[in-house]
Image (cartoon, rainbow, N blue to C red; front, side, top):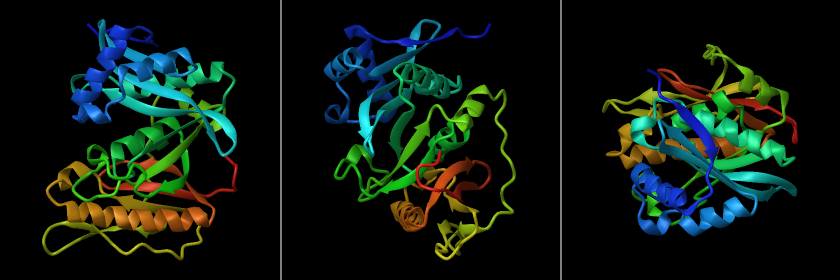
Length: 276
């Protein structure tokens, strides 16, 4: 029998205490880097969105956002999304995000933002391909000296700041989609490709910074977790993407999609400022 999944607002202290435990299990962060109970309490009371995903009555994951201002515009900033490992095959992440969208729309807002590490490809696929975010902002070492947020020793906490235009026709189409399609985009020009090295490693080539095509691809490592023993490789991929994104964002490009497969690519498109 299929599991019963319920997404609903959280509002009491015992539920917020459970959110702290979920953070501890999912990210294994020290207590200093966990969002505390009192933060959830005041956020839920003062216009934040704190939603829990329950599977057969057990709190299995949550999403948390708060009111914010981005480029002079009122919006929500989504700070946390977590699902316990044993429930990560239930599609809870995207269900939490779509419910978050509905709650923020009720407030009369049309934008949700959040940050994530560009080397986390499963997050990239959820963000761009499933939800329909766009990105034009790269934040180098955004969280600074926070070991819990680094991918490895001395790896900067670089982040992409994504924009989710929740009223746009593009996002509405994603919300109504019955099935996710992954089109073959490999015919597009590539500003970054991986190369197999003599030592068996897969390293980034030199980014091409002279493309003028309206749409092009930038390859990224498929699973950064496989590089945990090789932080120098993580640093190489991070440096290549940082250089590429910073350059093309200044040229008026935005990331508009992600292709997840045997090889993984960001899809960049020339996009006028303000267009979503």
